[in-house]
Length: 79
Image 1 (cartoon, rainbow, N blue to C red):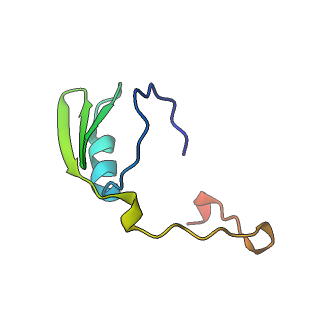
Image 2 (cartoon, one colour):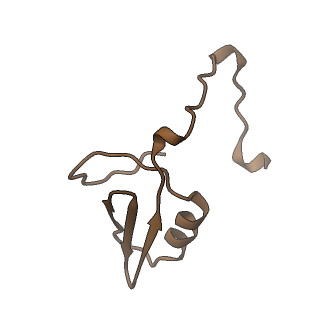
Image 3 (cartoon, rainbow, N blue to C red):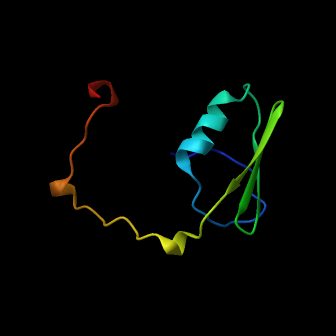
């Protein structure tokens, strides 16, 4: 997923996907601000804010690359 953003400093962390997704989905439409202090991610939206404990990406293995000839595309409607 690519989301346009104004980024002041590049970086990466691992965030609990379900918690972050649930929080983002509960926000009112509008801008969302992310700020990172070491491994603590602060997220602010319209009328709500939250902090998420994150982990360092090096603590997780990288996804293996898949060659085109072995890949499969499944439409989301099929789920």
